[in-house]
Length: 169
Length: 169
Image: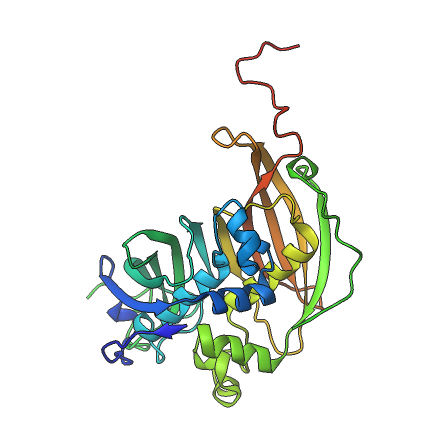
């Protein structure tokens, strides 16, 4: 796994900085056969992920990365470039994860992220939930994976939210 | 990652053997702090996954596994115990992945799998799509993750499917 150089990551971003409609691209991360096989031997030992010879004879015509490996590489790009250490409080889950095209040795992956919506939490007033649409692309621009992700994020103005019962000003 | 002993896996299962309503449990896989940190340093370097000291002071009160690590451990159990090498042709994706409770060092995970539905493919007559509901449980029986997964599987009677226009017998 080789991560390309990238501009410094703004670590001061909070929930309020993730505005619906915002779109950005981040990358790249390179993946080679050795890492594909090592990941799959541990977590997804199917022969089209672990055995170059059998994989070449099979449905995919060669070694392909485990979909969970692709998702993990996406996560690395999200953590390094999109999320924020000061704000990220983990994720309750993802929806509609789709593996659309094989990821093969030598591919360089990038991500395109669009903020779908962002809403303050009622049960945890110091944070909000950001939903993002994430596309993972290879170096040819082919979308290899998409997912709708959720991230719980700390708010900058944690104490500044009007009470729900407060009268309008 | 330590996998518990398990009965031999039936590698002769095909699409036809995954019957809606079928439910089974498989396990276990143990996860320790060293593996949690190693996975996260590579793929999800947020401090609640990588730094035991900072994690102890933070939102989760200690180190927790990356959700993608938990998903990968689930996949290992699926490949070893539930899927079938002769039939599995990969997956187009998953739906409604939810991380419901933290996975912590020392946890032993198992999976409970229920076949939701199974249908023959029209575009690829030699295979079918199986949708499964997968729950990941810890040793206390707490469900830590759920997901609806899809798997494309080879059929045993690939040439034996009635043509769609054939009259009923």
